[in-house]
Image (cartoon, rainbow, N blue to C red; front, side, top):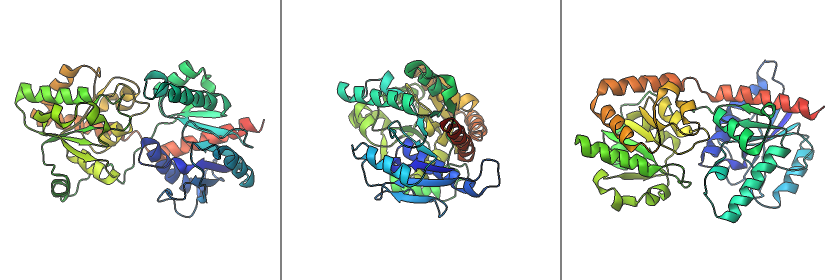
Length: 374
């Protein structure tokens, strides 16, 4: 079986992490002596942004057409035929149409149907592309049971066409084994010193609810007198939308900007806590990454977050600023309680791996191939 994978979506987003980590986990399975072995993996890459760490077992094909370009459809049709593909996997909602093999698509969330994140015309176009992906694909991978339920409800897809495959977490960057030099590194590079708490900003900030996170931290500081640094990682868009530096002077926020995975792992390992009260997540990769580093996490009960967190993190209504502030105060002032949540985070994170995700994804390929050959 020859599997084509659209790796042009590799970038610094959650989808980019999915592309890189899943491909790296799939690659060694090509030579594994299992019932599902015996496949070849073809990665279609942006020639200016190839996926790192794939080794020599993956056939890499440069594809210079833009992901949203009108030239992409005929280019992918030609490649599917030329490369004799049995399956094509699109890791994001735009899929190739009228190709010569079954198409598997991964849907990470249904945010465009639930939140007004774009102008009306673009929102309509994205919704149309999602509907096309749902109807024209042979099978859909959902990254959580919550997303699968949304796909069934909103896109009217039958349950037998959807398989849930949870994301994994990279143990190379996100682990609970700090080096003795990490605190000095964080201080020198970013001006960060313990104790500090961590929150995230994002380009697509509307569902991240950073204002509630900052409000909870400000309330915890005001009610307890606790002193801590507030560290905001990621693009500045979300922080600016929440009022920016002038609105949160009492927190003295430190902004790191976008971080490489290795530095984000270092931040998680030494943070007193990570606060992530999103209004909606299709999976919530940052939550899993923090837990894998042994970081105590406070998150929301919205979207897929309680599914991923389980008993590994505290969950609150995303607008319950008071409840989150009380939890922050306890974690900052009670080392035993903080250690308990750190240990529970590690136990829960151990339930997820990219190796498992790769095995389950390969099973989807076999299922879609059989359906396509009927």
